[in-house]
Image 1 (cartoon, rainbow, N blue to C red):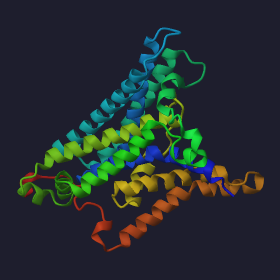
Image 2: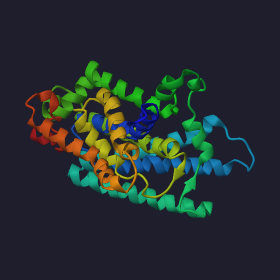
Image 3: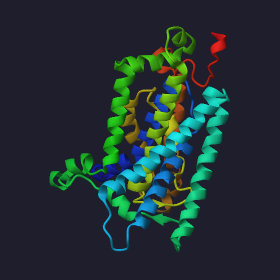
Image 4: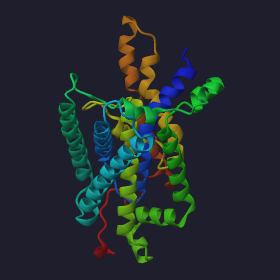
Length: 332
């Protein structure tokens, strides 16, 4: 039997980067842009925060005291800035220059991972570390600090109150995104742009502006997922190529949630639990082959959901009609 009190918090921590990535990608796809560069965006968001944190820690004199506000805000702003630049680059190529969105996204993923590995390797050399990684434990302590009274509530505190502030920020952002999409004029216009940009343009909606803003905001949200992974999940340790396939799982989660950010809160925790489920099965030589099968569960679930979604006739279960298509105003 799995100890749920120990399993659920680990599933939540594992799922929060997926929540940030899927929420950002959902906003982007609602505008009609298919950004397959989310893995690269998360990587750039992570390394940008690491760069800011690294130089701030270096600037503090040995034995000096770090300012908690600056220790959080510097990597946070650096992460948002790096992710924003990736979003602007994607929009410039796909919206302004009308480049193929699939090719651009894949190229940005390759670029983002290369960018992160280059600067990550450079920081490792600057730190003169004996291992191929950087430890920013002082900054990580501020990001992973849980509520001080969490331990007083037993299992309830362990499951609901034992996370760093970015975990709660991710959930709040997902709920706000869902509210904006479904209950505001801005959300209505954004969905109109994704469903029929020609019709939206004819109705006086600035299609280009909505695509730029939705994609850039989506990239900034996804970049926070990368920052959370390093500063909270990985305890401030950066090592090249440590992200695995979380960026791709975040994109798959968008399909799993049927483009609903509020559903993504629970779905990301489910995917996080499936991602680490193999760690909780019996160990031993007799079970080794089954562990490899358990690692495949998130991807099998994604394929099943993709098939079911494709078979549904309900419009609400389908992606935006113009997803992945460049908008040519002259064809209106």
